[in-house]
Image (cartoon, rainbow, N blue to C red; front, side, top):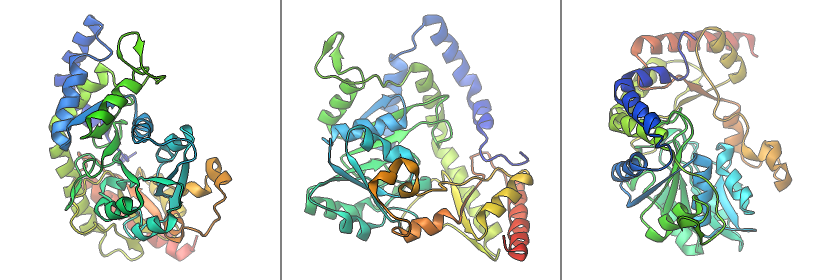
Length: 373
């Protein structure tokens, strides 16, 4: 690709001199599971995010499942979440026997607050706002609804490391939150990784125990848990990247400003709009265009690594057909799913490459407007 969707190699080159000696030492010592690097990363990330406890786990999906379990969710409980999210928000609910309840989104493609209240039933137990694309959802508006109905809020902060709103930082706005360190995230590991974030010591103790076979003392298992641990290899890379995260997030913000300037006058291109009071970290820069599939094809053929996040709202994916939702129930999300287009976005994206993206997008939009397909 002339302009890749994501350039992880540039990040790796920046941290190689710092990380590779640590990895070599870990290799020679065979200290792969747990240890000082993991506990140090948990401490550093807790300080960065602004919570009392961080528990590193194997991936973001596990982090959400552990957060759901720590919140007391179980079979038959309804968990309200936005319909335009990655399936990893819903899968953990399904795995514990709970029922995902989907709601529509607002103009920012974040969970629509009035739709949440309308979806509450006697079986509702939780609300899961997703901080999509590096934004921060309106947790402060959900809080009184949750309190009124006795629900717990669990933040899906997988895409928002370092984002904030006037209410506070993503991952600090509810009793418990989960995040992902998948390599493509703003803070990404070398492989999979995730974490549960909380100020609640009991929740942190539960997660740490459950993620280690239900044990806090070796061979003493207080519950039947699972195996979901962040390893030292991932933790050492995450520590190095965490030290650069603020700078990388600022570079993303600058790239977003450049995109908006370059694309602002393009007919047929709808730009993303930041929610008032938010400081977004632009995990993704998502525009909306007509003839999206054709535009995407043109961009990819021009060497531009564009993508779609996400092409199918969850109620229309085969895994959740059994819930009985119908096409047309979530008009904002369904319309957006046919129009959203994620442009290349990463900290090392320079203006010259963004100009190439903008030029290619303009040509594609114009060509598709003429052809009408």
